[in-house]
Length: 135
Image (tube, rainbow, N blue to C red; front, side, top):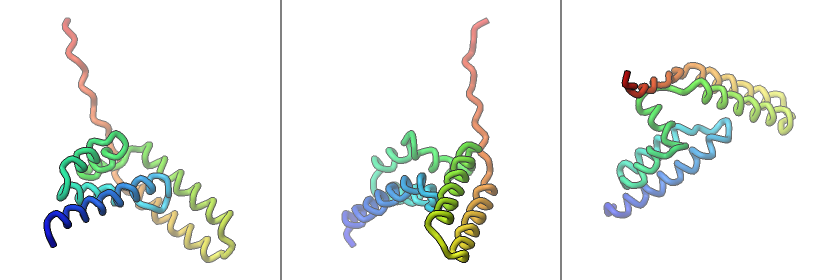
């Protein structure tokens, strides 16, 4: 496969992964970080400009940097993630599903994701150095 075609495929897969990652921010069962890490990997091999824009992005870059550096999730992100998860699954189970066994599957998924998120290390914010004040 010619290098240019491979590069275009990587950019397309990276762009699709960014879109899925953004959707994952709002849809409880869809992962965000996994898709953004895939996008970063694709962009790193195909386009330095796209990679830099993604990693330095105000909204998406923190997911990638935190994961890459092993810092974990902030307590606020954990709370937000679990709140959206339980609201989404709860609404689906109550409003959309009549079969008890499907409700059970949804509950099991919510519990499994909750356990997974709870086991992720809580990110400790780095202290901001105070400016030197002349005395």
